[in-house]
Length: 562
Image (cartoon, rainbow, N blue to C red; front, side, top):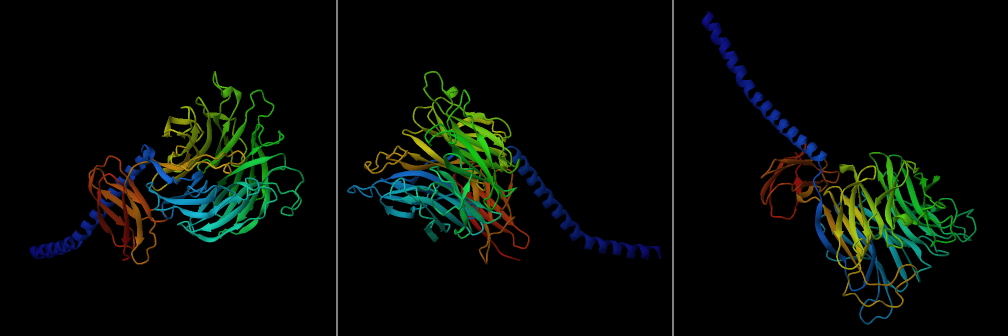
């Protein structure tokens, strides 16, 4: 009887073990996979605390290099297509036989790895007169840009124009004139507000004697004016004044505070002077999202001080981690001149609270021999640092240098030479690609020996007529493989898909962005074949083989729904 019971019990145990065995195996596999993913996450967390070193990935990118005379580039990043748009204006004759300068506004798409599109696109056709300072801002929700620039029959007398572009640079709407200027609209700036899904555009003009701004004070002052544009690029509000109407105000620049949904606008201010060519101070104004001024702030006013300087070409960068701004400008105080120098310019900065008021005193960021000017600043959240580029004459001619800055504006590491070629390089612009962890840096280069001769009618105001090309450099971290994960049936991007790279080193894991992009850095990996695994809940996992031979591998991965 005992033996019979034991046999029955043994059969029940065997049956239970038989049933549990596959379940235990599955649990073990799941646990192993979880441990593997946790290990990769820990490796990525460690990598995030020690960001990889950047280098010049591509130099002397020919962006606008015709025989005509290109000026003032401006770069913007498109996170939907993971590329850049660069716009500029061009003067000079159209061909060798012309004797009249024709001016155009142009643009070009630059890939995330620094390759220019086959041809530039035209934003304003050839015409005598003037066209200046195009700027663009990207809307990630519609994958469109709004562009603004000025054009007119002469250097004084230009009006502001606005148009909406698709991601390839073709007009969807416009361009249209904002209004007929009574004097001269100049120095456009524009940015996109992702909370309101609107644009703020700013300019300079004299609007006394018109009905454009009711209650406008009379006088001959140059004012900052603003417009709120809707998502279609149409005027929702404006023109409206920015700042108190005290003296001449010049060259407004904008930064957006995403925490408070406010704008900080700064400008060159001449309230202590009789015109715009005397020593300048810098003032700023905090605006709410509707463009209404909350208050005006003396950002840098040293008028009457013993070592007062001329402060100009100011820039702002917003730091969302600290909810504050870093301001930087060219400063020409007498104390910056070294022995034997009549004058010198340095880059000076100041931290600003969320409302634009100073955190503390100003401080020197760069003071080499010669002159430093035209700072451009970007805050990089994944490194919690600022990156700044500027024009520098410490080598005799004007070159392009860069510097990492801490969250308090202190220089980190050595100054980085971006371009030290013969000729003068200047008027820099910079855009950061968060997917690829790289910067597109653009400038105007006077080393253009094949350009047409300069015509007598080219220059105007403080802008001379001279040869020049638009060049660029890509500065960042080398990539091994990058690409986009999309749905097989719809082509729509898949967010938060898991991408794992195997081969020749420890596996690396990345998740895709909102627009489906991923990028895995090269690191210590060598040339050869790699395996990529892509997975997302609700989709079939996909394995894909890629071969790395020195250049970043670009892939489009389609996942089929389960």
